[in-house]
Image: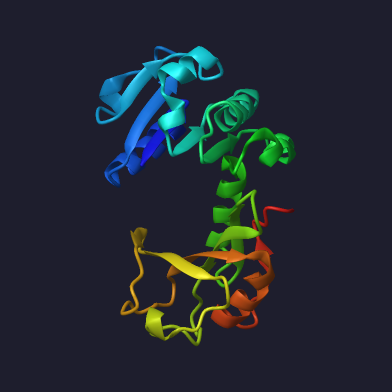
Length: 229
């Protein structure tokens, strides 16, 4: 997969390193020469340019990318880039960083945004989750459709502690995508056992969130870090 990331600050570089580690091709674009230092992420391609200019995006061959990530610290730039990526270059998937939560309402399909990620909101959700074992934490919502990524930390006494992943009948339209155990991510297989204290990451629909929490953590229903709050 070819991914173009605009914004080579700490957020953009962190995303790039993870994608490169998973075998993807990454191009980082930034207009700040101080941030465009190939030695920081040597496996990536680099372009010193303004990602809001058509000429720069043509030079980046944006139309050949599978995903465009707008990760700058400027919400206006992230919106403009997302719109250009969709309307001018036909990029299949756009992900945009929301810096100011007050601007979050603009980050939708009308601006070409498929997924909006608010870093402060994500941090808030994870902080709340850390002291709210058993709560369902909505990390972010996909702008197209009703799907969202949610997290539940399995409480002591959960009926699923010690159960195999393959033995659990998850709700309709719900997929367990990762288990975080002792701060390490695990790709779940049917033979993996779920343990108390595991952070379970799911892709699900808003209609199934309550059922999922009642299944995994009975009696604990309370949404923390809700993206709609």
